[in-house]
Image (cartoon, rainbow, N blue to C red; front, side, top):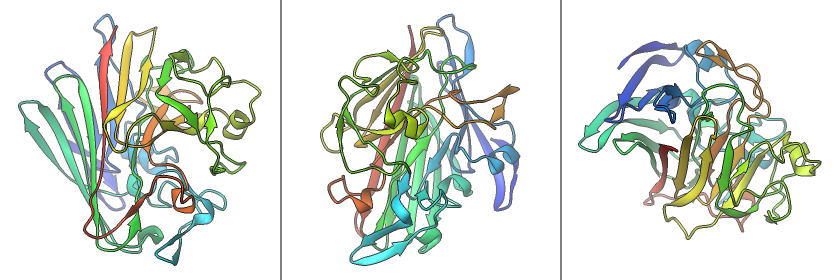
Length: 343
């Protein structure tokens, strides 16, 4: 644990976790942000597989949410408006006329309380934050805890728990950009997503409400496929997103922890399997990434890929989407497990 820097809202602490296999995870309490994750390639050489910065100043200036927890609501809410218990709520419109990733100061931009944890299975950090009633327009005092646990079996377990004292909405996700080569782009990475359907969006990236079958189009990742294979197809959805920036409907039952995706690099031999309790997975191929820099590298478009487990975008305005409502006496819980290996 060491001092990482100072933000306008408090001192920033960095935690370094190293498991029995030598995997090293670095996180800071600014936005529960993963700044580095080092694992071996097929030759045993360790390298960082997430995009990150070297200083708090870079995180304060970034507009790309690298490595952070997103909330209260990950992704977009149309017109920054929703109805809850027949009451209309208005949120900041921080992306055109819509609300994105919790607003101007979402969970990625706050300083969390944090403490280290350790047991015989591994070690981790637990973060806590109280989002007060009315913060960024959301109702209810929401108490949130986020735990990153680096298991000795080379798995990263991410658990989010929240409770509220008034009816509210919640949709949290982890927004790391992965590059299993450690540098270059991710277009040669192979990806499999356990999904038959994705959510088409309109010109402003808001779901149309349609659920589209992936067969015979660029969105089919039911088997391992190079991310770049169909990225530049003449597909209207790819043009809108300038690449992949879409939610997949996962093949799973309810809130069970189930396999959602596999990411593999033939170059490094590194593999990541993602399991989650969430109903959806946002695939984002860093189409607009342009100003990030870290570890003496410059990051540009497609320098990483985000696989963000979450509920669907704009769910409060789509009654047929899985509910994101949370009420007093209920507990929100979301678990994602990332399993790392080489082959």
